[in-house]
Length: 393
Image (cartoon, rainbow, N blue to C red; front, side, top):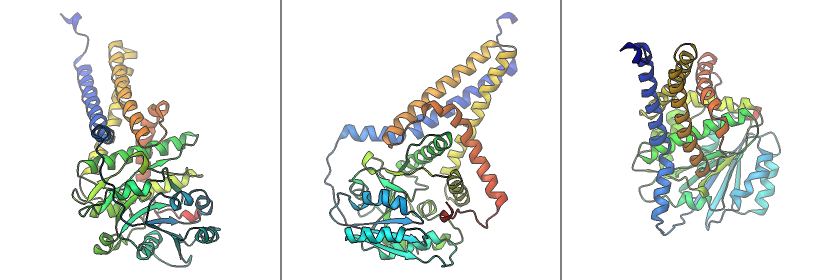
């Protein structure tokens, strides 16, 4: 009878553990990460033509030493196909040619207004100060935020973001894709961005919004002042977008827009340390998130890494003693990779971000390690300067 037993008790436990972790990962991808795509497909099949309203909108663009990006991208905001909107660019103490660029644009576009935060102003979060100044300068209640190194990919960006506002709607979450650029580090940033985007979009779609991105985010001016702006997070350099959404977004007042026309795109960072410092900034604010959604996704990251480790253990045992174990481990991984690749491929196409299928096996291992490194880096560096000064780019 023993000759028919292919596995020892230990091997059975390992196989069962790997199988459970495999199922958890498949469920995360097919249920949570695939949710935006599934809901988009469902909406497109209905193809309901609703009357599009055009409430007046103020677009607020944050800029710090972004003269070149203002030359490249600001016209895509200024030339939107929208009947009534204002563009407010907040120039945060720039020392480059940003002011001259903005003055030239103002001569050409009467709906552009720009304001300046002096370089020597002392404030814990200059960005929050700059955005507050921009919000006060806004003529209209609906505010649509982006940054100078971003561009909308469609002339209908304002239209599709603004159409979500009803009497109950106070916040609209959008997505900002990474512009494609060669190099592994840029692939890592794109992968991390897509993963984060799918997390907050998916959660908001089931009525549990927990964060958003200031590179493509809209909310009402009334909501901002009703809650005293950023007063709850003035002790933090960052948090002008994710923490604001985390504090005030609810199932009732928040909608999600991720149609292709709603996507903005960020230019790749020339220096990897800029992206790294943005990750440090996120690590500093995430500890203040309310609710359990971030914990849910961190559990997903943990089980993903445990699954990859279990596959390596199965393959290792197979090499030394039981080839069947290696075969099962490889099968688990191939099925996992297939599910992951399909979900990311469809989601990338939907969100206008170039897919990175060939890089997935490596990105899948490096991204959680790098995120863990960022958290430790943040702890050891302390609180003195955990938000990168964009002027140092």
